[in-house]
Image (cartoon, rainbow, N blue to C red; front, side, top):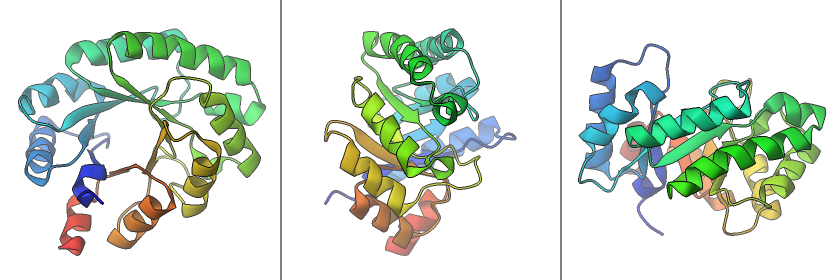
Length: 218
């Protein structure tokens, strides 16, 4: 199994994030060998510059944190992020549409955003907020997004009442094709939990406690 750091998106998405914070997490990611940094859209360009010549990818969020944005706005956000240097886009699905069973709206949304993302050769992660979905809703999400060329289905934003869970990751793995990765995020603060999520089928871990987790491993 590759080093744990290579599975981690080193994340900072708090409201009071500063440029100093961004420089710090980019330096930490470079040194640790994390898969990516996940930063607010306004800091994509700075992060991309900071990580030039490095294997660490720049990820950012689209429609964050509630997924309310219209599809055209999400597509525009994705386009601007890519222009700024983003490699990976973590888009919050329209959670209200999931809860309402409005799958056509979700199809329209993912089609519009994917057109922008794949045209640029970048990666799309779709966040479905698994902690507030029923098993049936989560399975339906897996079935829906399996029909599209997304790269990851992601459990959570970290802003809902519940984040990642072993059960949700296992359910997602059972109902997704192998080509679609699973990013577990939200409330991952310990090495044990991170390892359990990977064992359950996660292929990426998003967290802000990345250094503490690596310190535990060491």
